[in-house]
Length: 229
Image 1 (cartoon, helix red, strand yellow):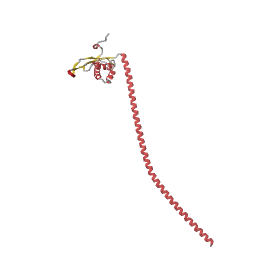
Image 2: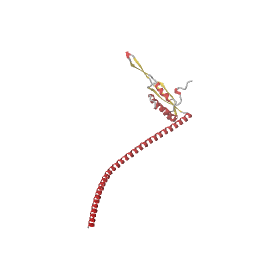
Image 3: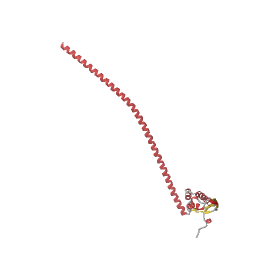
Image 4: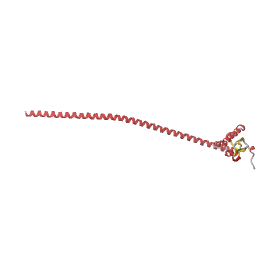
């Protein structure tokens, strides 16, 4: 038993006819988005590097626009119910080859059709739950990334503040050492002066002691002379 014909499948469709690409190349990309919701299909096409991905993305966007504007559906409730590529006109060309022969060139084309339909209630509920969980996880990642950047910025600021404090402390220590060196020279000079002054004082005291001894000797001589008389 076969399914409904391609032109009788339910849903809102958009078609691109005669695009210069082989149908086999387009089918590789269409197989990726068939049965997926519109949001997931867009993400898949955005991450696909094949040339057909850009074209199929435009056809998908046209189908969604038709469903929203013509049938009054909600874009987030749609999924790709059918997607296929039929072979179009093939233009025959040739290229010269050796010994007067001709090489055949087939320029193929394709007709791309994308059909979108509304998801049933059960699948729509599961889709909403999955999207809510995905949004919560995305928000958690963003918050974690923001906090990590804030912690990194705070750490950098702390290191810069510590470096500035260390630099200020080093400059203050250099200033103190320079001041202490100047004071040391003055203290040494003052100490030397005091020592010299102390030596002079000791010399004057010695002179006074010698004078006192001579005076005492003279007094003793006088006393002895008086006794003799």
